[in-house]
Image 1 (cartoon, helix red, strand yellow):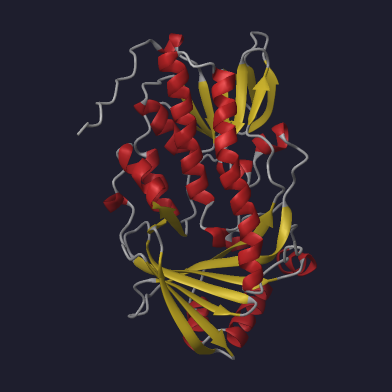
Image 2: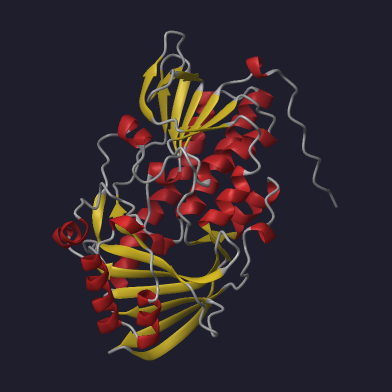
Length: 395
């Protein structure tokens, strides 16, 4: 019986001999890629983020599948740091006239965590000096040396051999590299919050599903160590209704801060909760003082992920920057981590064994795109089955 060969160590080379890699975006996908590159022996890596103070807002619950969890484990981020509640069970409760009509129990192939827990664990492990805050990218052009040159607001340009945009749903990278693919409003909104107490019976990820809405809840560990109930209330809204409630375009304000949610919006959403949800569920919403919201958005499937810049450089799009997917697919963070992992493997093959980089990147793109297309197609179908959002046209 053969055994696995030991991992070959990365070659020792000076930073000046290595490609300069710039990652734009410091939320899960970007830091994961940075740590994978560090593990491969790359040292000329910079992570830029437009925020001057990262993570002022506490993030909500997200699901990470086993493949993504294993990647995090491999870069030294063990689950006990970011998975305080280990249930894999998912309880779906069907509701009509605010009463339960049946429930099913399934299992999620992974763990639920909180965005702020996992991202904090990742950022704490970045090598000193790699993360630069307050760096808002607004342009990308070929430089005089044939490399890519990033224009930064109120700062000097940065040159790079590879630019990775992992900068979220309203990606600057997507706007620069693939401007024809614009966000489209999906027809419903994820209203979110964290209630101060947790129902005694809440141990599993629970979905309460009246037709035309959805209420998801799970325990969450807050930044201060306290435990709360993280909830998401999916509710249909026309584009005009969104504008009326929040005075914004749903494809431009893709994340609504607590101070941007008006009393009228709270009253409107709470009223629908009282009409659609069991009393205990509606009480959780009304007991929450600070809400956030995210309109659900769609986008056309990407045809590419890799873009040549100048004579020698490349730029790539990862995760939500490439294509935001609907949250009911549970594929957003998973897509980003899996793409970062396979990109890091591609770069290792180039650096260690001289693989032709354009050919290697083309192969990486060809392997990664089908999973993105699948998730983009699945999201509207899942929403339609629950009466949520714009329904896909029949085949």
